[in-house]
Length: 448
Length: 127
Image: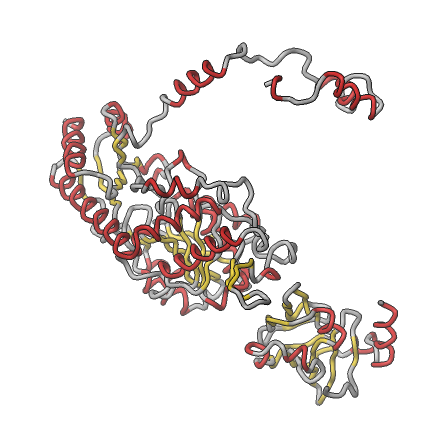
């Protein structure tokens, strides 16, 4: 890299003498001798650019990717088709920057795109106000729980085991350090056990959390959960799959006060776990408690339409010590990908994606459970993901699949021992009939 | 503008007026003037017990959010719900627009508060 550092030896010497030093080592005078590294770093010898490219390609080829592998894994991140126009548009230099420019004088395009994103999220979720996005679905859920505690001035959060265990951990971590208490409750037939919720909930509850479709893929009874929460004055927070909302009733219609979710499905690649985006939307009474950025549409002094950050006074940088959240940023480029995805597909297109996911998942479910190797784990309705029970060793099954370039379902027991034997399989619109049939035959032959 | 007769004032620019054992609490003209256009008032919850100095409400203007501290100890028995739809009342008529009414439990803090002329000179000193 030395060739890319623009200053010369003479210039370096000039800079050193300007600060009264004779060599670079003197800059580190404050660092004790005992902790200084007195040898060269243990690095391989230098490579040419061509060699580096070859080396990195070789390393990258060790990764399994969904171009070469057929993916039946979901559990929060899904292998949907990404129209190529998305990559081209988000790569435009006006959008692809390391920092989101919020200054209205120079960023009307970015701000308008965020405003459109917020509008789309409100339409999908049936809520009144959405923010400019959060880091991911799990942290959005945790933030929502914290806000409910702030709004209600109560500190109990009721959370069922049917929520993704990774999200549950994040909710618990956030709660612990905010002095809030998570009250866990169980599940029955793959859905949150609402009878148990009804027994447990008191007027100390700030919120009930529900994920739908949940970790097992089952669709939850959101309306009933809302009734139970509201009867005790608690809020209902729903974490939902945005694509499923093209078919299912929105959380807003079913009584949710806050709707959040993982937005990766909307035009964002799996990327080995991120960056993703979380969406976050609320009913109007809670808009001033919402974390993150919000873009509003307004008129400038000449009466022309413009876009600016709005409800700024609510923001965490003004009332840091009293804020219910300290998130002041968003995932603008990922939200832009989601915006383009939704705009491109439109209402009908999104419905078509959702329908294909549902039909293909149900086809795979029928074949698997008819094969005699897998038992249905539950009978609850599901969207693009479902859980079957397997008597054999799921780790072995998935390893055998990988050898055949298939990424199998999630061995749920690996995340929570309570779920041992549960295999959670996701089937998106990308899967062909032949792939599904091969997957099932393979599962049967491995098990024989 | 409504009159300020009988009002006492805090250093944080709240006013309080006692009538029949009830304390009317609002923000001063100076406060509304420094905040600018008020766009939202977060009202206290009825039946809340507060001590003098506790936050009972917050007032949001286009540029900032400010807490409102209770000048007196007591229980919130009424809030001015007109402020929900028309928060600008605090700008237009700060002394005629109370934020909350408290049933006074301890009036001793009143002695520490300023009367109108003391408050006037306090505001002048501040600037």
